[in-house]
Amino acid sequence: MPAPAFDRPKWASPVAVAAGMFALLTLMSGGRALFGGPEAVAAVGDAVPFVLWFNFLAGFAYLAAAAGLYRWRKWAIPAAWAIGGMTLLVFVAFGVAVALGTPFEPRTIGAMIHRRASGWRSPSPVPAPFPQL
Image (cartoon, rainbow, N blue to C red; front, side, top):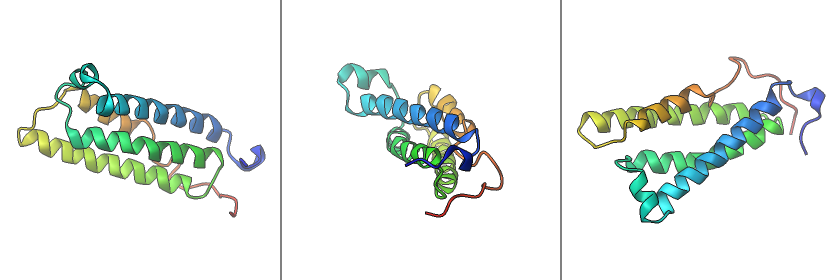
């Protein structure tokens, strides 16, 4: 059951819904790239496999964090920070792989920047009080 509306800030529900939609889109696109037919695999071009797998699997974490944020659970903000931190680490590993000569799709750079900038970290430097579970 979601927390009563008066217990969570006004920004939490729309942010959670947007994050949930982003999660579903991530799962659909990543799943298509990884498990689709030959046309889908060809469409990803020179995708770096570990980045592709990370983004697909992170979609499940995005969905969980979005649900936690919507329900205003105390673990939701640390989960968002963890997702942001892991994304940053994968972005750095991607940069190293590219520097070492791994072929890549230039659009991956934009996608990783978008993931880092889109809010998978706490919207506030100090988490708001959460209800006791």
